Length: 275
Ligand code: GLU
Image (cartoon, rainbow, N blue to C red; front, side, top):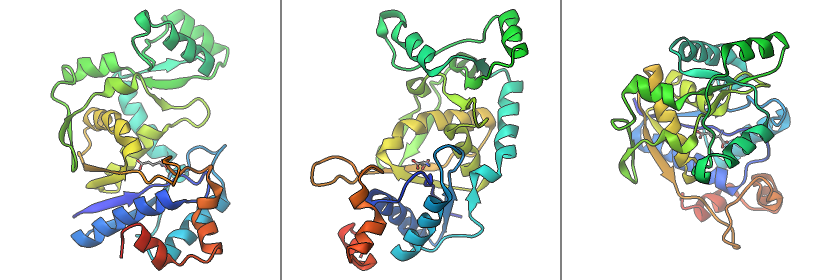
C-alpha cells in the first residue's frame, strides 16, 4: 500500500517550506488512497525541544492535516538503530572514528589535490584503537565506502527511482564515509531515516530537493541492510521574496507567526498551491 511520510526535526518552529513539504506528502497519500505518516526525528537531544514537537502537532493540525497514530518518535527507538548498526559492524562495513570535527576538516583539506570535500578514512591500527578505547576516548561509527563497495562489487548497479529524474545512478561517494553513529547519541540521521522508512513501510519518500544527496547514501544503506527500496520524490524548495529558501532562522515566516498575523490555513494552502 502507498505510504509516505513527513519527518520534521523538532529543532525550531515549522515555516512555509515545511507546510509545503507536509502538504505535498499528505496530498500524495490522499490521491493514492494511501497512508500518511508523521515521524518526529529527535535523535539530537541537544537541539530538539519538547515545545517544538508540540508546535509541530499544533501547526500541522491547523493546516488541516491528519496522520497515523501513534507517531513514531526516533528517540524512543534507539534499539532499532543499534540492531542495524550491529549488523553493519558484523559485516565489516563500519569503523570507529575518534577524530574531532576539527581533525576531520583538516583531513579533508589535506586530501590529495583537494579532490574531495568529504571524509574518507580507515580503521586505526588495532593497537592504537585498543589504546584509545582503553582510555575511554569517545568515537563515532563511520560507514566504510571501500568495504561497502567490496561487498556490493562496486556501486555501478546501484540506482534509485526519482519521480522527477527517473532512474538515477546512486553515487554514495558524494557523502564520503558518513557517520552512522555519532559520538554523543549513538546513532545518526542517515541510519535512523533508512531504518525507519523500512520499518514504517514507506513506499514513497517525498521530501525537498535539499535532501537529494542524502538519497544516494540512504540507497546504499538499504542495499547493505537488505531493506526495500522506496520510490523518491524530491520537491522544489520554496523561496522567499529575496530568492533564499525558507529556513528556521526566518522567524517571521513560521506558521505560528503567519497565524498570529491573521493568515488562515485556507489562505496558506491556496498560496502554496493546495486548494
Ligand atoms: N528530519 C529531516 C529534516 O527535518 C528530514 C528527513 C527526511 O525527510 O528524510 O530535515
